[in-house]
Image (cartoon, rainbow, N blue to C red; front, side, top):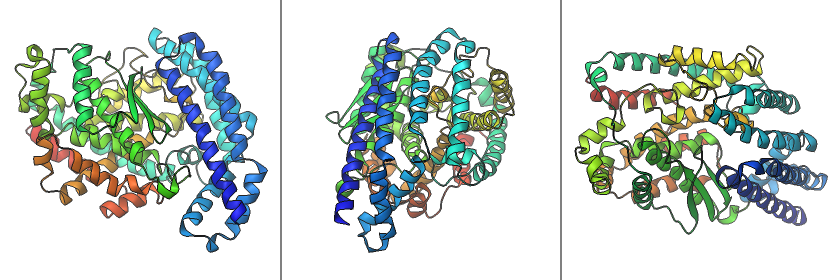
Length: 500
């Protein structure tokens, strides 16, 4: 037993190191790598993924795990948790041939560079053959794994363990109807028809200064993390004390960088604070799902950074940083401006109310693609049709439509639903946080976010994967995923803003 335990802990640590190397290569690819380096990078990433896969699926590791799992009841609580979770994941990984893993990594690594070019040139035909390859590989993937129920469950389980298509279809059908009704109610108001978006822009240097102020108040430790620039903002972990996150100062709408920075910093804080101690370098020292991870970024981006108390503190800082541009922007003007409901083509620039409609759209298209209800050729038109149906607007180009996200270039089918799950979780956490901290608004108005960080550490970070995501929410909020709380949050916030 002792020998087997020592072996599985050593292997977990070394596989974790492989993951850090792959993360570093991926981060460089999306930030500083020369455009023509994509082929070489694809080879490097495919080699790392193959080596890591071979370690995880080795007969030696499986033999040790199988022996430990058969005697799991005799293990300590810590060892029991690590062994049972790792055994489950290893059994799943052993269903995938190493050649398949290598091929998937190489294909998606090349596809990412092509997606960037296709997006820049607004030319879907460049990306189409690569996406066709990826969809076929996704079908092969769920044929190898074959979890019970709908084939999409296999893809979803990689990001949101235990979630099913049946649950999401039921939840999203209800949520979509409510969001469309809310949108229609608001767009008929006088305030909606008279609202004007802020017309001024901030220079990159001003945006960077404001983002820096934000991060200092969010208590981001820059001796353990760094902020860079990428086409699509993201966060990744090279190790416990090396978290990288990015933003983009060139996007349309000067506030995009500010809110994307808040969003990615929420991810970074979670990675920096997640359970370590005895569970360091084990499968337990990870987020239990991407939904819970997304709840952390949406919590900071929307519930905090779009709240009125937040702008009581930040409005003067904007005025100080950009006095000419922000001279007429007081707290109320900022609060109304940054919370405008305004249907947009771009998911990452969507307002709170319409954001989940963008996610549900992608979920439905993924199902249609994988079930052969539509072809890759039909995808752009199908995308535009759903945008029109959901949001009442129609994309004029593929760049503002089907080419806007990088996820499919990475083979991340099953990923998008976690954005909506995380958004709903965030609203539940925010309600519970406010209930437990009646003075929260006053502290936020002073720019003091330390109480928020402590509360998230106690209720989210410290659990790692000791529980499933839904169990963490149940433990903290008294119930699991509940879209009604999110809809209530939206009504309480946006109806007064629009005089409904």
